[in-house]
Image (cartoon, rainbow, N blue to C red; front, side):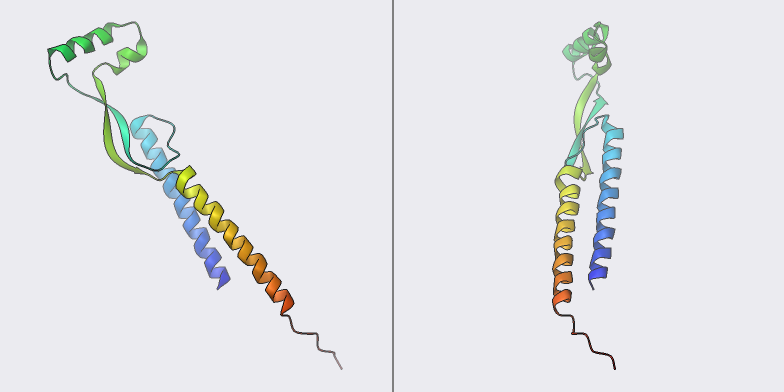
Length: 126
C-alpha cells in the first residue's frame, strides 16, 4: 500500500512539474516576460493597438521619432490583460512536492520503526 502511495506521489509530482514548466514556457513566449514563478490566471501582453483618436496618433508618432529605442518599439502598442493560466513553481508546485515528500519520509521512518519493534522473536533452530 505504501509503495502505491509513493508511486502516486511521484506521478503527481512529475505531472505538476511538467504542467508548471509548460505553462510558464507558453506564457514567456506569448508575453516576452521571464518571471512567471507564481500562479497567475491572466498575463499582460504588449499588443499593437490602433490609435483611438488624433491625439493618440500624434503621441505615437512622437514616440516613434524619439531617439529612445525602447520607447520607439513600444509606440502604437498597448499592454492588454489576456486570460491565461500559469501554474507557478514557487507558490504551488514546489511547496506541494517538498511538503508531501517530507510527510511521506516521516511516515516511512515511523513505519520502519514500528516494524523493527514488532518483529517476532527469533525461533531457535533444532
